[in-house]
Image (cartoon, rainbow, N blue to C red):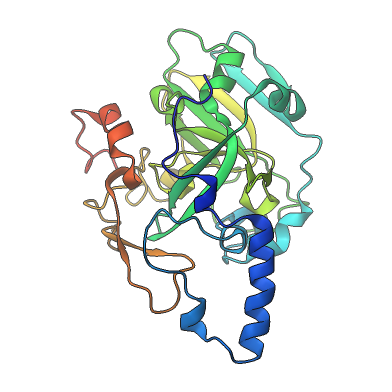
Amino acid sequence: MAHRWNNTLKRADATPYDTYLNRRQFIGSAVGLGLIGAAGMARSSGSDLEANSYEDITQYNNYYEFGTRKDDPARNAHRLTTAPWNVQIDGMVDNPGDYAMADIMNAMTIEERIYRFRCVEAWSMVVPWNGFELADLLDMAGVQEGAKYVAFETALRPNEMPGVRFPVLDWPYVEGLRLDEAMHPLTIMATGIFDKPIPNQNGAPMRLVVPWKYGYKSIKSIVRITLTDQQPPTSWNKSQSREYGFYSNVNPTVDHPRWSQATERRIGGGLFSRRQDTLMFNGYEEEVASLYQGMDLSANF
């Protein structure tokens, strides 16, 4: 079922990796010489479809297993061993088992998907992911009749993940989707960024990406996928159910109890860049609104 969705963004919209490296060297030299200031380094505020740089995407992350600061994952995630890697697929499937990551990759068609990424903390990026549709992996496992939800679990390795020593959340990190959300063409398993293997701090070797939901739904470093007929628990909902619902759809009309969700700060925009209006379903309303027809989105947040 690959290529069921066509990007409105193309490779030309993203800063190539080599260009990013060259530009980083140039900016460092220019700043040292006083040729440009912070305003000159700021990205043009033009289109919200301009992809972020490799540096933005890989150096500013939430991955609490490696620490709660935005730079902690990039500093600590090198400890994570990502090969060999197996993913257990179980529950209501015809073909349960431990699937080697190498076998999964050999069976899948890798696509580029350049998506908006919106964090519940009201910041955003645009990321050029490489990966495959989750639907293809679920089809390989054979979803049984009666399954309604897909549950996901992140690796839990205290020797490699310094952040799990602290009870920030109930480890391991878990997430879930309704089956129709999981099977939607926009929902992917990302294995790369900028046509390179996905870095550890971004969820190597494989993470979920659901672009119309807040970023914490896109669970990282997945080791288990379970098909079930019951709504699965999710980490942030277990922690603070009043603030984080199961659906977690990007919705500018439903505020977080502690801040507005009407606008967002674009990472890489510079200190004085203006906030952007947040789009319903993060700009994917046309593709996904029908999934929630008739639902009260303020109650099912």
